[in-house]
Image (cartoon, rainbow over all chains, first blue to last red; front, top):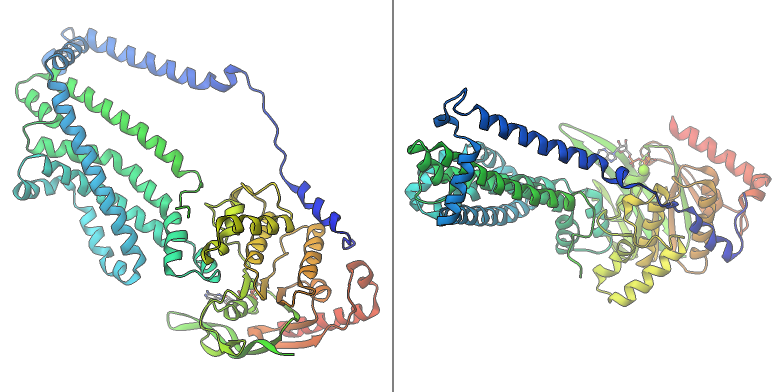
Length: 286
Length: 254
Ligand SMILES: Nc1ncnc2c1ncn2[C@@H]1O[C@H](COP(=O)(O)OP(=O)(O)OP(=O)(O)O)[C@@H](O)[C@H]1O
Ligand SMILES: [Mg+2]
């Protein structure tokens, strides 16, 4: 082993140390075959279930209890025609969006601030866990007393659920920040503000995104439960109303709409997890 | 020669429940301006603890560190510290990691870019500017950390086993680069290693630490520069020094 004595030697040698990238040729089937099969099987499964359901109703089981796919489709068409569907869905969607926005904004802020102040966090931690453990349905009667049976109550019920999930995940993210990274910024002459903005904020982003991700379905649950408990509009109300009249087709039609909303929310969740799984520049650029 | 960095009666304890681990006890050292000091010691003898204290990252339990006749109370940007573990920001690519010290100092974007490019080139990472730390090998991360420390142009460098994870060839290249950088820059270097040969190849002076940072040996390295590993190995003076340090290390383990 000799120590390199020329400048050029040092310059070119390390550059050849990198990984080698090669292009991989794949046929259409290798690329999409598996996904196509899965989707095909899913469609077949849905079709089989629907046909069996249709055949079984009134033949082996009483359709008063289970309704049947054709009736459900008819009910959906009817509701779309007279505007019922859109009216109630819109109310529920608004509750979900407002509840989610409110809960996650407050949750993220609280998580970030509380977790940064160690003493405060240690004092409040058990109380937060206790409140988190309360089933949020149990809060509904109280919220009715406080806010009436309007939209506020559902928004706040959804927000209460979302808040804890976002809060806990953000706080965990902030508290798990690598001590070494903070020290690195201190060595660069960074102050508390630099540490908060350039280390803690981006490092806790994964926790925050996880919180947002798991909270999305709970916004829907919170809103619908609020409507089921007490309301005069929204999809939860529609279910209650239909069930009270023994209109099972109506109940199932509403459930279909709820599943569609849930599916859309799941797509949003999927997009967010993709974001969360990448270590890409999420921090504020200056 | 003026003393840049001075430690006196330095003790560090890590309390846990009712007991405390003593990592360093009554440690004293003076580092002269412009010198290259190798610190040699077995694993767990308190080398990293010592550097953390010299860098102002941790508070001593007793004693004090003085930097240019001023008591060190926290990190100082004149002191660059390459820590033993990697502390690159995983959400920043190499370029933005290297720029970070300048970003904190408020240097303009254009100037940051040029300064970072120069250091990235120097450590042989050109072409990897847009890679994230998770996409680099361990040795490449080490080199990126080195570039990040150098970009701030510190006058004193503390390095904790910086080249341990590199292959022999690359290690030799970076050792050479470090010497080139240090030579004529007036910078002071404290270089921690557990490799006797590396300590002798680089240092003006070697300090051998035993248990709890007890100084087993502190001597000049009279070998002429430039030193080359190949010719050193057969140099009788080097062999004698090597044996002396090995003995001191063995002594320190007891
Ligand atoms: N944060 C800490 N908490 C408790 N004990 C610690 C801490 N840091 C170091 N120690 C203890 O101090 C002693 C010295 O540790 P140090 O990291 O300084 O060793 P080192 O000489 O750098 O070893 P190595 O060569 O393996 O890096 C060890 O016994 C270790 O257990
Ligand atoms: Mg160490």
